[in-house]
Length: 116
Image: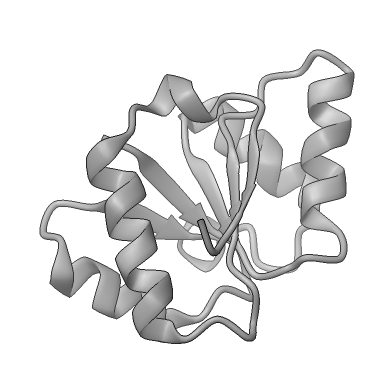
């Protein structure tokens, strides 16, 4: 099962509903692991060290930082970009689908933009 790290700007309403909808989802927020205010590189480094796919709404900088890690040959367990315009219900459904129907190795080095 996928394990997640939600970056600082990720919508907590999505996270709460995501957890209620699918018991046992393993996610933490950057705020929970003392990464508040850290740059994308530090967030991605923590995710790589802990085998967590990054959940982000930061379309402007996080995908580029993730792709730089991949280009340098550094581990990047994946990033899922949920745009701000996406409805919360749709985001939850798609995240549940990804969590249930995929394996962590499928997302290594990948940046996925929702909607699917």
